Image (cartoon, rainbow, N blue to C red; front, side, top):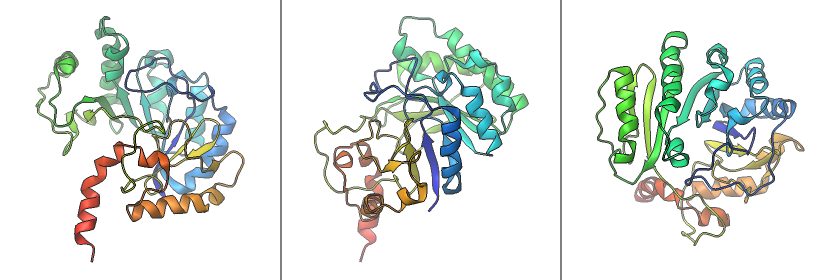
Length: 300
């Protein structure tokens, strides 16, 4: 078994509180660098990419530079998602020197959500300047400007227009503003810099109404999540560990992967059967309805 990506939450603490991202109810936790190394060593043989988040802002980790150094030493391929507000705290060279970082996702939609009356330009300029220098110093680095605030089949929306305009002006490029997030989510700006659009979604919760007991998900086939206390969860949306599968700091990782609970969930997804209550109350799973229909149609 090898996952496309494993989400390792190095901290569940964030310096912002976005309306689209529910507050973490768990105990506030920061993963110690040596605990991170322990987890990383255990999961690397089973995954292609490491994402340094699940909840929380990774750049808010007080020892983020050490975390990144460990990634270098263990030769991990890193995807980093950040709101970008703390980017200048470290200096750009830290990120450019790191051969581990393959992709950085800037959740640009988070700034206006938290500071609707503040000038966007100083915040955005840091990210744009970082991107311009990355084109010169790390041209193989993928950079995504995330605008995950669209409605289904929506255009880029007027609330994003000033962001689009600033980016186009900075790079002196035009952008086709028509986007259908059900078919194509990315728009190339220059080099490996992209806009990445998506619609807002509701986080799954045991308090949500039931959505049904049939469905497919990429959890446990393409992805896995690990909370800052070592708890293993099936996906990046299980923010409160409603489906704990074990603890990688206390157990052999292979034993967790071979547990009956994990196998039952994974086999259930293959057969479009949801075995856990959180999955039955997850509306995000409906995004995979086309796959369910396709498989059902071709079944004997």
